[in-house]
Length: 92
Image (cartoon, rainbow, N blue to C red; front, side):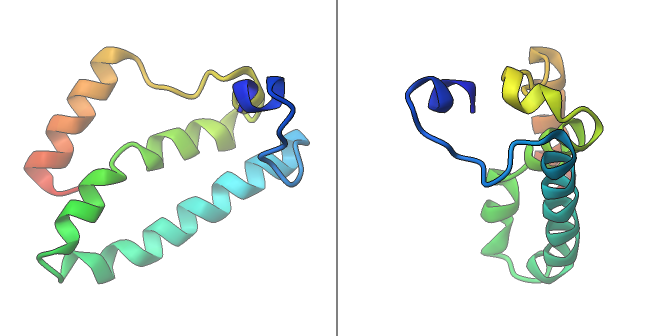
């Protein structure tokens, strides 16, 4: 987001902290609703694995929306690797 803003683009409809937190919470709700439907389809496993970082990133954005505009949503390297292993082994 910071890089896009620096380039004169506006990727967010509303950059207020409360709006960013609500956007993240809404996205987490949508993921939670879609996940059970995807689990039943074997071809959906790839889709679930592609988005394995989304719940963590969204949780950080909901907890501290200032991280969005600061560009500090990425997990640590250890958390990223551990999360990928968990996603592969448990399908989450």
